[in-house]
Image (tube, helix red, strand yellow):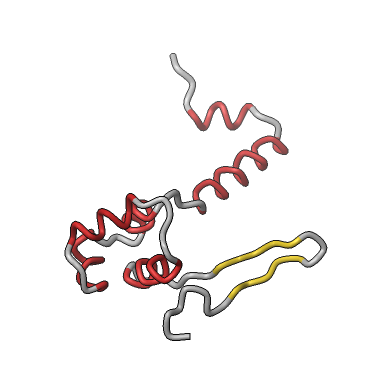
Length: 106
């Protein structure tokens, strides 16, 4: 009989279980690509298109781009119901949050 995920996890030392849970939570918090972000936000391409004032094929194009303007990224994220925050980590300076980047009205 095959072992279940719960059986395998229960057989591991507590410290290892905690590391696995922490890594799983981190991976879950990472979203790979705008399509995944849109799906996580429970939005269709058509809904995003309406919020952006474009046609659905434009949303498909944006989702497939690997390099895009920050203003486009900000608008897409806002159309999905979110806000965009840029985080920069500099050695010896800690974490900085850039504001106004990608805001075409700033």
